[in-house]
Each structure stands twice: as C-alpha cells, then as structure tokens.
Amino acid sequence: MPAEPATPPRSRGSYAKGVARRQEILDRAIEVFAERGSDRTSLRAIAQEVGVTHAALAHYFGSLEELLVEVYRESERRGDRQHPAGPDATPVEIMREWTVANREVAGLVQLYSTLVAAALEEGHPAARAFATERFARVRAELAERVRRSQDAGRIRADLDPMAVAALVIAASDGLQTQWLLDPAAPQDAALALLEQLIEPPAGV
Image (cartoon, rainbow, N blue to C red; front, side):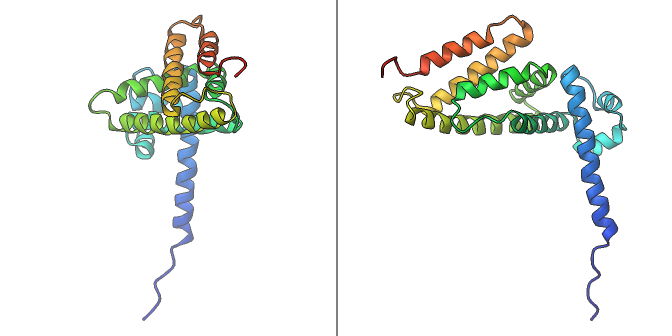
C-alpha cells in the first residue's frame, strides 16, 4: 500500500504567509488605534484606514469586537517587552510605569476602556472574555508582587494581597478614565498617595 503523500510545502508556505499577513494587518491596526482610539465605527471603515479590504479584515479577525481585543492584547504584549518591570517592583510602581507609557498611546487607553465597557453589556462575548480573563490574570500577578513586597517589608504585612491588587487595579483604571476626560487629573499624586497608604509605618 503506497505511503500517504507528505503535506505539500506550498500548503505550509501558504499558512506561514497567512500568519505573516495577519500580523502585518495587526501591526497597522495598532498604529491606527494608537492614533485615533476606538471610536465606534465599522469593520469596513477600519479596513480602509488600515489599508486592506473589508473581506481580508473579516477573514483574519471575524468581527470588529474580535479585532479590538486582538489589537489590545498585542499592544499589551509589546508594552510588557518595551517596559519590563523588575521582579521586585511593587504593584503601584508597575502601575506608575504603565501610566507613563500610556500617555504616549492615548488611543489604546481609550480602546481598553471601550472593551471593558462593552464587557458589561449583553451580546459582547469577546469583550467579556477578554476583560474577565485580564482582570483575573492581573490581580493574580499583582497579588504575587504584593506578597514579595510584604516579605521585603515594603508593603504592610496585615493587608490581604488579593485585595491590594484589586484596589491598585481599580485606582489605576479609574485614574486612567479621569485622565482621558481631563489630562489635568492628578494621576501621579493619587498613585503616590495609594503607595503611602499601603506602606508600613515609618520605623517599622
């Protein structure tokens, strides 16, 4: 019985080209959203701005909501690479770093806020899955940093790590929203105050 033919190299090449093409579209979409935010518009209008056909955008991302989720996830991954926080950084120090970085990409900050708002509404499964997973992941990551900071004497030992993590996220997101509406909102001062509230008393 003859052996099954191997997968033609052209098929593997076509797949690789498809992955590369999707990444190219995503790269351009990130640039567009960083500049203009996520004003509610159609997939067709975004395709025109990105420089691809509506059919291509629908093929690679399915829907406008899925595109928005992928754009933010990719931008977040890039942010982690470009602004790596040291293992000993406290949650507030990380949020301060993110705050500085976000000021350069206000459109992506607005995109994040749009996704979180959509997650609270019915009929937005992609946004809800994104926001739910992200909050759980970031809480867990920050809670672990809280524990390390407590061991190092940088955060009060009597505080629940998960509660501190949730509070830091709430403060960061709330301040971010205020900044989008009013750039004069005291983000840095508010984060500094939060840091003081969770630090051990002087001399302890």
